[in-house]
Length: 277
Length: 328
Image (cartoon, rainbow over all chains, first blue to last red; front, side):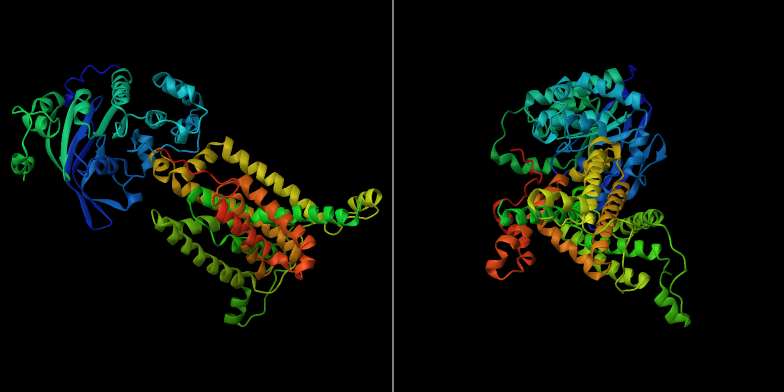
């Protein structure tokens, strides 16, 4: 399933298309103000931005988990493989191959690691293949096999992130929406998790849409990136180009040509930060 | 052997069996609380409603007969047939599943993501609604329920204990049956939640609604299932209590006895509900037997609640309650 087009993913078939969506929580709070993005098959697409930029909301708008939080897509459209999917149940979306790994891992604490993984296969009925997929997950995360009988609530943060990703894999998805996998993890673990994501992408052909605050790591592993700021996409481009972009370098990667900035420049920083408005 | 000890043993055994009946009611609470975080105030009324429906079907009562008679001036009460108990129980179960679906569809679907207190208040409303609905459909008179369970003193135990102690224990056959049925019920419930796919999904939903949604578990389906199971447990409790003391409004008050059981056993533990029920049952009977005479009796009315209060102070999660897993 090796995807040879992954270096130029823009030319690949578009799996997921988000078209100018607006999201409102509780009928009053406008969180997304027209976000558009395309996720090509076989690529890792990164959604970058600071706290409250709307990354999580965008992912939830796609996976339809918004409704349980009283959020609503009021404008625009979300389509998967060209079909409109925004009124479907999350379960229906999982059956079509789109699954979200939520921010903060959200393991089922009182279930064992293996039971957690098995819940991922809830929508499937092909028993023998589920067993094969479980072996596959254990192959990618050998640590989980050691801890398969422990309650997930008592495993470490890194292990829980592995459980969350493994659980999503058990649904045999096509596209995985991965929300903030680096959250609360040591840098070494972050590298390890991203390494696994990359090999899942390259060996198994999974498509990823990745929301991440850690711009540095995300841009190293992703093919394409979108930068969100207060509910809008302010910049997008191939990951390589974004890494070289001086504004991205300064505001997201913490590098600057002039060295450390003094406090006096803070005002111009704020002005320059709003690229599009 | 001193007389007090022998009497005490009889009291102890009777306490155990009363405890089983408390546990049956508590089980219904635990199931719903575990799976949806809703403290279901209406569990007791659910048992009443189930028992009323069962009696109504068995006796071939015409539903809404009072209303029909009032509107059309007719005088109908019964269809004039008797339905066999097994068949009536199955029909009642169907009614309870439909009720579960209606509760989910009409109430809790609209309250997803609301505060626990709001869900709790919804169940209070549901309790009063069901109480009224039961009255309107089946009438409010006290009914006798007899599904064929043996009642009265168990002769062989009486005889055996007479041979041993020179004093025959009074153990009610119904209590023995209730115990056996409760044990089977719990075994089935535990097996279901531990070893089946839907049981696993149920526990997953109990842990994290959002995550369950994200892996494609339908909360709606799981909650209907849980309310159906709770309805089934309520039916079993309703049959036991209804056979013992008649089907009437006060049946719904057994829910109040289940509260201390829950505080002892923990709101989230099925075994906890059982052990809690047994402790309360034995405790209140023994306390009445030993201490009752010193304080003028009637301790059974408050013993359970005082015990629950003590537990609330020293061990708020109960004996078997899930420890809240918190990582630092």
